[in-house]
Each structure stands twice: as C-alpha cells, then as structure tokens.
Image (cartoon, rainbow, N blue to C red):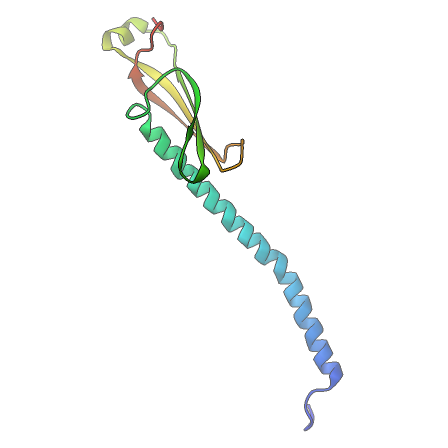
Length: 131
C-alpha cells in the first residue's frame, strides 16, 4: 500500500472476492430459510394432529369412517376411525368397549397432501353392528 491509497486494480480484486464469497453463501442462506419454514410447518402440523387426536372420544365422537375437520389458520385434519375386529368379541360386548384404530392427518392450508400423520389404538364404544 502506498501513500495515495488503494489502486483501482486492488479495489476491483477486493470486489470480485466479496462477490464470490456472497455468491457462494447465498444458496446456503436460502436453504437455511427454506429448512426453517419446513420445520415450522412440521411443528404446526404435529401440534394440530396431536390436539385433534386428543379430541377424539371427547368432543369428536368415535364413529366409523373418514372425515375432514376444519382447524385454525386454514389447516384441516383428515380423521379416519375404524374399529379393530379381533377375536374375543364376547369379552368386548361384556365390557361395552372395543379397540379402535385412529389416524389423523394434518393438512396445511391449500394442500391436499398431509404434512404429518399420527396413529393410535384406543378403547372406545362398541360400534353398532360390530358383534
């Protein structure tokens, strides 16, 4: 470096180096932002699916079939409830309870594809015509 400052060539080389570094870092920063958005979506989906699964048998009655339920912020839940047909039906009839297979899929706003699905086996009422 001399007393009059940087030469034009030195400034151009520094700018090229900065441009190369920023160009190399940009895809990584974009990827991190997309990953963060995806993580937020999966966490929201898990919370919606878990809370919907917890509602089954309380304010959502157990009934055979599949239905979609509207949730907050445009989210939907696709709920499938099927009784599990096993032996020992006389025992289940005596207990007035039966095993059910429950599946909840959380659907993000504007999507028909589940972001996450949770499944559970639960004891619930004996469905009509099951025995």
